[in-house]
Length: 246
Image (cartoon, rainbow, N blue to C red; front, side, top):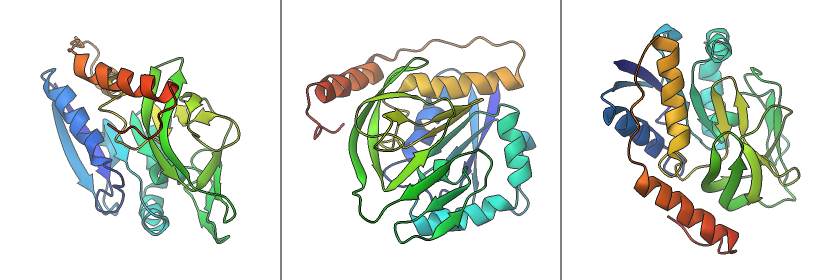
C-alpha cells in the first residue's frame, strides 16, 4: 500500500520541531509496510490535490504565515474541497490560524485568512503570549500532551480536540484546544505533537487508508515508549511541574 503526503511550505512553516510530525508519520507507516511518499510543496501554482492522501501545515511567524496564505489562495477552492471530502490533515499554529477568516496581529493589522472555516484569531499587545507545556483531555483521543507558544487567541464553535487541563489552548478564556472538522486537526501543540501522541498519528493514517482502499489490515504496533512519554508528561503536569520538557 502507498499513501502520499503533501507537506506545505516546509521552508517557511517549521517552528519548534514541527518536522518531527512528518518523521513520526513516515515511521509509523513504514512499521506497517505502508510506503508514505512525501511531497514538499513550496509553490502552489501548479499543485493538484487529487493525489494527496494526507496534508500537513506547520507553524510560522506572522510574516511567513502571510506569505503562505497568498500561496494557498491560488488553490483555495481545491483545498476547501479536499477538507470537505475528508482528506486527513494536521495543521499547527499558523497553519491552523489561516484556515479562518482573519488573524489580527498585536499591532492591529488584520491579515486575511483563507476563510475556509468560520473562525478568527486575534492577538493583543497588552496580553502575554500563551507559552508552556499543555495537557488536553480528549473524548476521542484520550490524554494529549504538547507545548504551545502563541500570541493569537482563536475563537470558534467547531468541535475541539478537547478540554485543557493544564495550559491555555485556543485562547485563555474557554479552556478548549484545537479544532476537529471532518478529518482535519487544527492545533496549537508544537513539540512536535505526534511522537508523544501516537493515537493522533494513527488517526491520520487510518483515515487516509479508509479513503484510498476499501479493504486493509491496520497493523497494531508497539506504542510502549510513546505511551511512557505521554504518561510521564501527563503525570508531571498534573503535579504542577510545568517546566518539565521531553
